Structures are given as C-alpha cells and as structure tokens.
Image (tube, rainbow, N blue to C red; front, side, top):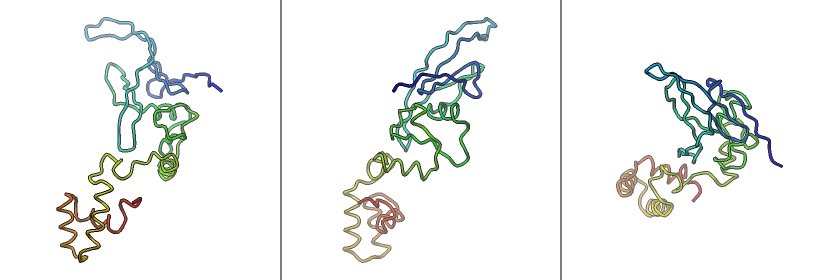
Length: 186
C-alpha cells in the first residue's frame, strides 16, 4: 500500500522549507534580496540529499539556509520525526524500524531510547562491531592472537605492555580484550 505524500513546514524554517512523510525535503518559492539590494526570485525544488557517514552508519542529510546564511547539515530522519511526531524527547534517539538508515519514511521512524536503538541494530545485523567498526585498530585475528599470547605467558603487567607495544594499542585495551569487555563476539 503506497502512502500519500504529505508536506509540512520545518520548524525554524517556516516559509522556506518543508519535509514530507516520505522523507523528502524541498525549498519553497521565495524572493530574496542580494547584497546589492536587488530582489531575486528563487523557484522551490526538491533538495538533493547527501550522505553522511558517522560511527553508526550512513545517513541522509540536507543543508538548510536562512537569511542567506548556510546552516549545518541536518539529518533528514530527524527533520521527518520532529515535523511529524514532535520534538525529540529528552534522552531519546532516532530509530529506523527496518534497520535501513536511508529509509526516512515516517512509518519507518520512531523516537526510542539508546538501549532500544542498540537492540534494533543487533536485531537487524547492522551493529558495527569488531573490524566492521571504522574506529577499530585491530582485526578479529589479532584479538585471537592477543588472547592466545596472553594465556601462554605470565599474567604480568609487562606482558600486557609487550602486547600493547606489539599491536600498537594501549595497555587498557589489552586488559579489556583479555577480560572480554571488548570484542565479546569472538
């Protein structure tokens, strides 16, 4: 069943931009005065989304401007939720129900707790852990090697320091790997 597209003004940008329940953003027709005092007409259009990669995935963003000033990029999913469901409740995050961070339809979005969002990521298989995490300095194989080498040798701080130097990570990271506080999945 297809959803009928509904457009609503974006808070703080009324008369300038609207967002739809299908996750599209458009500028509205407007007349602006340039630096020379001349008035120019601008025809409204559907904005091109760009993607932004962050530690949690790839998300659609748009840049909005007001009074000729460019503002920071805004996540399309946040604009849709804020416009159709209301402001973000304290402590809540944007959750994509199907696990697809590029699907910004209102029927795929909800405000949820960080715990609910993480649970969704495990359920959808989109959790970026291990070497899939862009901040990871180690591979699964290296973690297994660290655990094997640590077990084989005496459990001293010098052993942790040697492993940290060998794998170019901190001593605390080695301890967390050994105690399975990190890399729990292997």
